[in-house]
Length: 422
Image 1 (cartoon, rainbow, N blue to C red):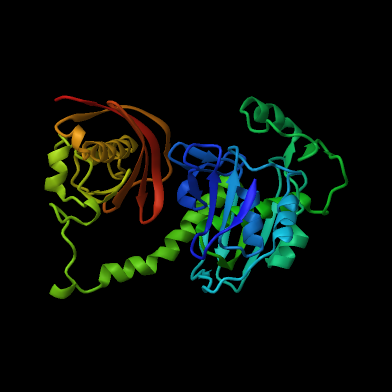
Image 2 (image 1 turned 90 degrees about the vertical axis):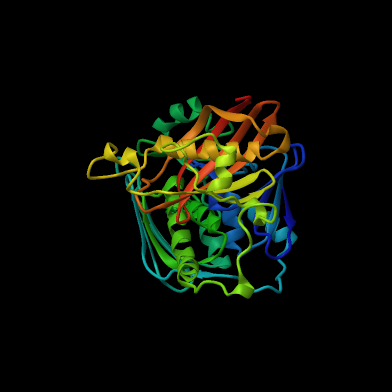
């Protein structure tokens, strides 16, 4: 692994130098693909696992822009903490950049309850974390609180190591989650005993490592945060979901401005949304229906906002008048998850059919993988469908799609489809 400097505005990016084209993945919550025991980022077929300790190091030192080059799908685990990464930063040095840091100050409390996890982010100055950790049996319950600065990061959090409970090991091995795990890079708790090759580095090392993970996962917002986080029994899944909620709050003012802005004057008229002069490939419903054979009640795309290379963004307006709400569910209407999956497939099909060589064909939905439904979609919601074509070979196409409502991810899937003559 190599840390490289980057210009202002780059953010933190992971670059896979072992793959053709050296693809990059931005460290943003939109790119989170998996949160089982660690945080995995993905873009197309490219993945980087266990990014949280590296991200925590950059966030702890207030480093906003950097490239992380890797020749594998995961950073070196080192000793299970961020200590070795801190040494890399110390050897390289940190250079201030001219551009102003865009800090997000939390404007109102953000709350989350997910299983045993309870988190609340309050407005405040700086970034303060107060965290409680414990296992399901209440063993080794610990609490710690810290105001995060480069100094407190390095002294109070960075050296805390990964830990697990002995009874979890069989599951972790079976699921391939600790292939490089040993007492050299993790602490194991068995009953009331702590198994480690050295004494604990902090009296509260377990909760401090949980806080280290929080620092890394919260950096996926893409901006530094000012607020006070109070958290109990955290996990990577909860951390990333909390970041999504903070992002939704952060984006609300901009959305409100757009919603209540007066219509543009003739001099500021919006660009065309159809035809030869369309902006970034935008399409209205009439243009969409030229490419898709679907019709009421199974046309799941109302318009296309943009097509940029292999990326396409579509929109579905969810209304109470749609027939599936009669039975799904009476008195509590929720858009079926399979229809969100269908929307992803249809938007992917448009992107494929837009290519000249594929015109006058039909995209048949073949399969879906890595399907996740995260939140209910209700009448009145506007479903934004973001799709990236990841593979196109012959008649077979593959794509990764995400559905969002007001910036929150509500569903996602990898889809495969085949082009055939009608």
